[in-house]
Amino acid sequence: MSRFVYLDNNATTRVAPEVRDAMLPFFDTLWGNPSSMHQFGGRVMRHVAEARGKLAALIHADPSEIIFTSCGTESDNAAIYGAAEILGPRARIITSRVEHPAVLGPCRHFREHGYTVVELPVDGVGQLDLGALREALYGGNCLVSLMWANNETGTVFPIDEVAALVKSVGGVFHTDAVQAVGKLPIDVRTTPVDLLSLSGHKIHAPKGIGALYVRRGTRLQTFMIGGHQENGRRGGTENVPYIVGLGRAAELAAAGMAEEGTRVAALRDRLEAGLLATCPDARVNGDTHHRLPNTLNISFEFIEGEAILYHLSDLGISASSGSACSSGSLEPSHVIRAMGVPFTAVHGSIRFSLSRYTTDDDIDYVLEQTPRVVARLRAMSPFVRG
Ligand code: PLP
Image (cartoon, rainbow, N blue to C red):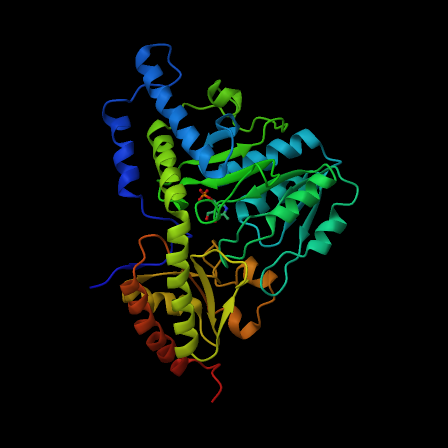
């Protein structure tokens, strides 16, 4: 395999060399427990505090509002369990049909335990039905969990508007911002979210570190009960090297977001235009007016996404299927289904997700290879119109 082109950055990203370098001393020399009374522990704690400050700065939060967790999934679970337990079973939980399983799973758990759970529909481009949200909010006393940006299509929900609506009825608002952080500007001083989840490995920090933003004054039941770490809000000895890595990744994201976002969006747009021009019967899935700068979800009608991926992978190109669910079955994803994508396109959806490491040459190569793969598979497809 002569080429390696990685366009699966919504699944995970490469650890930035600057992040790795920042982490190394915390394996070799500064390996103390930050909760220890001695000076060695105290020195380590200062680095944890510094990382907390850098992460807080990325979303304009106060450092005291950041809780480090093990991943985005834990952050989502901690937010939903923690808030739903406090609100009690009379509260309504409002979410959408296109959320990540880390949100849908906990919401459905509470449905089984007597809570009313509303899963809001989306339209054909995966955009939220705000009218349905307004209706569901009637009466207040609710926990609302809606994602900032969708991992499969890149569709960005109008979170400012959503947050204002939820707060106008006194509800608690959680947003899964795992895909938005580092790609879109986020400012919790002007967007009234109560709880916000993020994950390190989507922003060039390692896998296994995340954070939950908890607005000061938000009542939350502790999810991980143990020691007094994180001000008693999340037990467990701090994962210091990874926390330091996440802090450095946040700093890099803040510094490069505007410039990199523009460059990456231009590459993505070139990829999109090129594929639409060279592959007949292709269609973009997602809201092209409100979309993450790095994400392209595209359906090639009449062929299987998995077959395209398999051939692209043989050519050294890593992308992702929008149609396989995590169980490995060939069922269309719940996101694509919720959008009502036509049957002929539902199985042929592919997600290309770019990063700051994506180059012009990478896009040229994908534009050269993908039309050939699509044409070859179409020639074999029993569904292609003769
Ligand atoms: N939420 C969204 C929108 C995601 O895309 C992901 C990961 O793909 C998660 C949550 C889970 O994050 P993690 O892999 O850190 O548990």
